[in-house]
Image 1: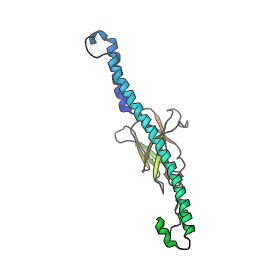
Image 2: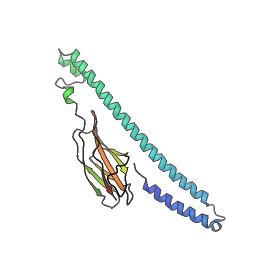
Image 3: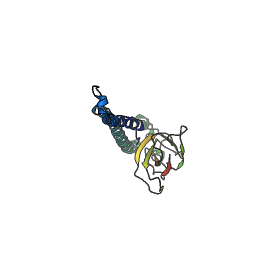
Image 4: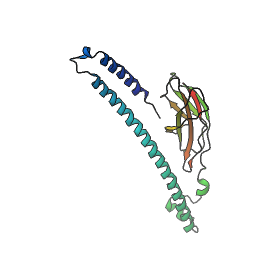
Length: 207
């Protein structure tokens, strides 16, 4: 999940200014600016970050629910189409009235679950900040789901907990929200109407 570094940068600046005001309180006497007013600005940034993170978590949950609903809906539609074909097996011209192609076989037409992908490379972004993560393209994909984890610098074999970072239609990811000297792990999987594929093996890099 994005770390919102642009908010953290401004919080650090305000914290330093607040500290300076506290050390030089007499010089600020008579102004409308105090350590408390600066803290209010810091609190506003903290709340803004919390709102973004909470929204990202909620959006991920809603996307997951929507995909589950899609899988259930597809199963129900498949069952109904089979029922239609059974009822009108003697007159396939009736299928068109249900929006079904008379030559369609829904069992064979349903795609297999996405195959397990592989991350091919993680390279530094062109501006030197962030990573471009490239995965192996997968067939019969509606969307790709990406997760990221923060690992240890010293041991790349220790796999961290993963959190959702993006859902897109490309087998690649641009992650600009990274800190220097930190190891980041990435993995991805595909999704289609048959469900989720298996997660790729985690791959990591240090900025």
